[in-house]
Length: 114
Image (tube, rainbow, N blue to C red; front, side, top):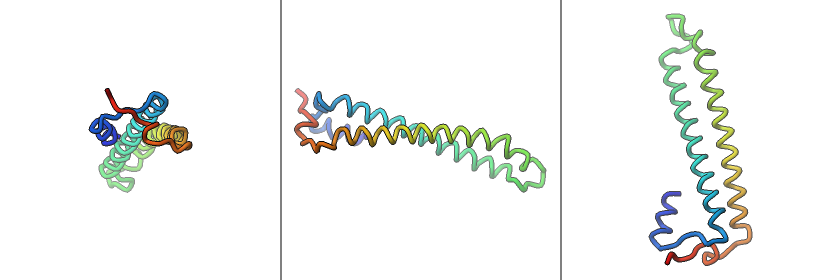
C-alpha cells in the first residue's frame, strides 16, 4: 500500500471525492489486517521458541507441564488476532468490490492535485 501511495504522489494523483472515503477505509482495513497478521506471526515465533526451550519430552519434567500454561493463552490470543485479520480481509474485499464493480475509469478514481 505504501508503494501505491508513493506512485500516486509521484504522478500528483489523489483519490477523487467520490472514491476518497472508500480508498481511505480500504487503506485502514489493510493496515489493521497487516497488524493482526504481524501479531499472529510474532505469537507463532514465540510459541516455537518456547517449544524449543521446553519441549514436551524434556527430561527435567517441566516441558509437559508447561504446555497448557504457556501454549493455551498464546493460541487463544492468536485466534483472536486471526478473527480480526479475517474481518479486515472481508472488509477489504467488500470495499474493493464497492470501488471497482462498476469498472470506473482511472479519471473517475483519481484526480490531479492542484
